[in-house]
Amino acid sequence: MAEGTIFLAVAYLAMIGIIAGWTWRMLTRLVELSGRLDAVEAAMDRTEEE
Amino acid sequence: MTAERLVPPPSCHDAVGSIVVHPKYMRLGVILTLVGLALAALALWLGFTWAPDIKGDDWKAPEAYRILFFHVPSAWASFLAFTILFVGSMAWFLKRREWGWRLHVVGAELGLLYGLCVITSGPIWGAAEWGVPWDLTDVRLNTFALLTALALFLVQGHRTQAQGEDMRDTFATVGMFGFLLVPLTYMATRFWQNRHPGPVVATGEGSGTTLDPAILQVLLLSALAFQILVIGHAMLVWSAADLETRLNRAQMKLDARM
Image (cartoon, rainbow over all chains, first blue to last red):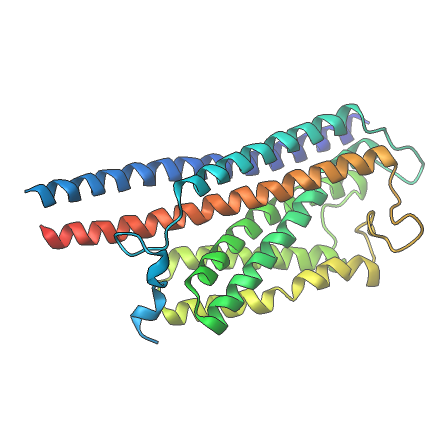
């Protein structure tokens, strides 16, 4: 009984970890890319003004 | 093919010449992802508190059956991802559509993500119920492992190989023919059932299911959550690819001015 529950807990920890980790990594990447794009576009605007 | 044909038509270009994903689609992707996660969490809670225990001498570890509330929807989600991979690969290979390549990349990423969930949880349940995590003579286990390995090969290939038409053609071909494993995997337990349990929904007999109604309802809620999650995740991957393209082109334009 207890052994099956441990297997169940390990399986859910693994699946939740995979999905949550991947989602977090993707959201972080989107924020980082948006920030870098904004910075490059701002630099382009500055070079146009000059 | 010239380099120009790799670029989408002007109607969907922004100032730096990439496919435009309106920010509202990225927000929609985030919202769908959060809704999918919330519904999956609800299904999991119901699966542990509302779905009944299973009884019978046939089960060695009956309490471990609750793995199916994420394991089966993950498998169905991976099939949707592999379908996206197939459509994208076809669109790239036959029509040279840039959006087709994007779909190919999205399908491979998500096929790997959900495939990993399945081949992680499956052997854990196998260890509890069968006493062994894997059976090399079971067709379903092996074809699904091959599918996940194919997604891993594609994702690694996309990251390490230089972008070019030949590279895209090669990976699109793998994506198209690899999709043959999806119907084979789906039908495997009907034709060659060994260790892996047979179908529990759409069995083709009687009411179409062998499950207790409460278990079936939780399973279907979880399946809905995972399908929403796949769409949300697909929009996030698409948005990230779009931002990367725009960033690279803006950087090149800026470098040219300096």
